[in-house]
Length: 108
Image (cartoon, rainbow, N blue to C red):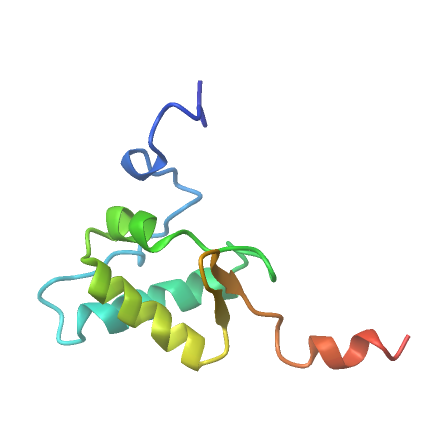
């Protein structure tokens, strides 16, 4: 059964999870953390994760992209600095509201 909770998702990637550009190239001139940050930005832009919802855990991202935890942390830190995601201690990392969206909620 697809999506069964007993099957680790990191081992079975679906075509909906990844596009052709969603791979970190080891011999690229750009460091792996910057490549991953770009991949995660693209996934955010295409709506893979919705506002105020969590992105995959560091552990899961490590498994999905075959990277070390410090590399994943550095990539996520880039997104935090850019204001695309925010972290909640002991809870995870969440997608931030798109810029300007909070300002218009009180206008209606």
